[in-house]
Image 1 (tube, helix red, strand yellow):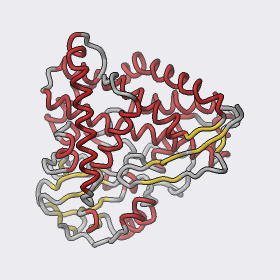
Image 2 (image 1 turned 90 degrees about the horizontal axis):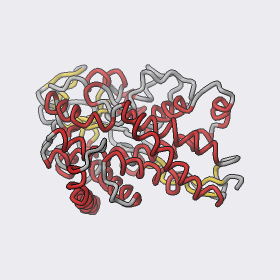
Image 3 (image 1 turned 60 degrees about the vertical axis):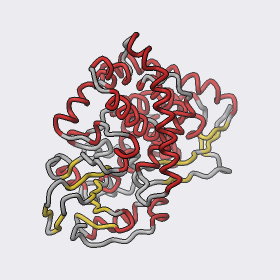
Length: 389
């Protein structure tokens, strides 16, 4: 392990609310060693932003990493040309042009249909009843797994997310993750021949057209599901909750003094849906007096970097007119999130404006409870709301 100062955490408390510990870690030093996670954590924004690009030291290639072991070696766990060649292959499925000309219309259609179903009821859980099905339907189209029910898409995504964050080695979480990846493989099998015979813009189809191997195709679809369901789901429901609990901020949008994209970008900074990305130390390295040994495990803590008080004024406050240009909610460097354009369109251009535009006097249900969880991936478990039906 590294020579970074040791910082002990209570895993349960860290999962419930990581921000007090992350603030203390930033004050302790640029790097801290957390025995409970078996890793060294990099928590300051400028360090994360700079070092994420140094792939010769902080490598994404992790043959023994949880994601690789559980989901296969996808492009996120590759560096340099191996990463870029696969990224280029999938680009036609997630490019800004494809999002605008192909996926945006389906996002809008699904949002309207879901709102048609829930609007007469006068109450809902925004996670379960709106954000979850909307994100899942979008992901079904983008991946090409249109034969998967939206609830199953949500289940397998959560199962893989839990598995990739299972650094305490819970065997039940690992078993469930394997069950989820097996389900994805079955659904890929069910769409394989059709995707070859009738090419489209889906991730399955464009990878087949690019000539990627079967193992590459399967691993990258699992990667897309692990990041493309939970994070948009959590950001849709989470941003809505943030605006409902900060009515003055919501009012700025109504007055034309701010836009939905600002609200989403600030939420993604404030409560980063993707809070961490792991790296393998490729060679012995020294950083700010700390020795990092080859094969050490290091976590780039996006959730901490986005609340770095040396970069963001009053970082624990949700303020949608803030300049978020220094935030790294989607990562930085060669591994910048390939799905960023789709996420922004789904959340800020469709999900949020349609939600607040359709449901009159939308407000939190006073009889309900909003509870957040997670540190590697963070979001609300439920957001109960009511409105004037």
